Length: 68
Image (tube, rainbow, N blue to C red; front, top):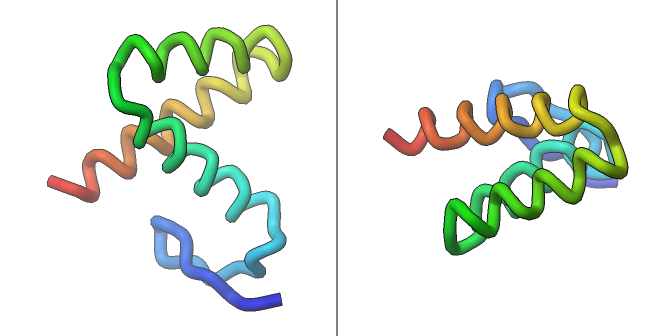
């Protein structure tokens, strides 16, 4: 599998959990409205639980901070 670089500069396999998590956070962050992002995360919390959603929110914050 190809190697990819995470937000923090770490290189990981493109099939890794770390890359899946970061690409999921990027996809959620790219939703068109805040309401869309909130609704998606609320549905996800029911399936995966609050800790998983909090981790995604932290990654999304880091992505937005990088864009500044």
